[in-house]
Length: 289
Image (cartoon, rainbow, N blue to C red; front, side, top):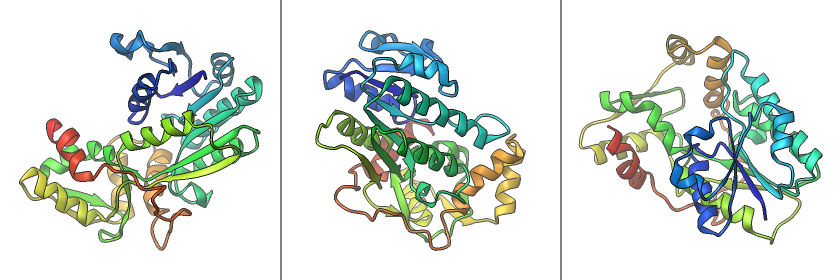
């Protein structure tokens, strides 16, 4: 089986690539920056340079591919939804041109809403478009990445996290490595076909209050959390240099998943993965602080 992996240096892709190699696969890595792939890794993969927002490049790069792990790259422009639409056009063009038989798409909890969840709406559009392509398809509806805390490193150091979510409302948190494991098993398994939705909820639902408590215990210094108004958070995004539409899209991911939102798939043995937040903090966050 010839498997292509997009965003191979991403939070999930870097783990998925190595898992496939250990499984005996020589994956094709689709990337804009092949120079960033470590030499020790490059000898075990096929490197192809392409831009995930360029349909012709993606279709050309995936000729002869049996399966693809597709990730919409993060929006970069002042029109984030347009960025997602171009990525959607790319994977659809590739599947249809090359008759790719199997796609595993890295989506998100909240994509089931289809509209009203900020940047996640872009993932929802990709889901809908892929549903009509005829390939065997799994949408991985992932919870909130532990690695998002890396963007909050300075806030963690200062001892104060801020969120627009109710601080005691639980939600799914997940280690990217666990998502990669689900992705690898899904790509390699021959026991499924058709359209599937696979939630990846992590080991337990956590509130921001619980996250702050765990950080306090692991770091040995107090970390608090407070809820702030949407307008205050948006202003922080703008001050950080985000274009207005991007600030709205990022804020919308949180604002759209509160006020009674319940994921389409309940937590179960199938959707629960093993890595606890505490272990991730020790192994990945602490060394960077």
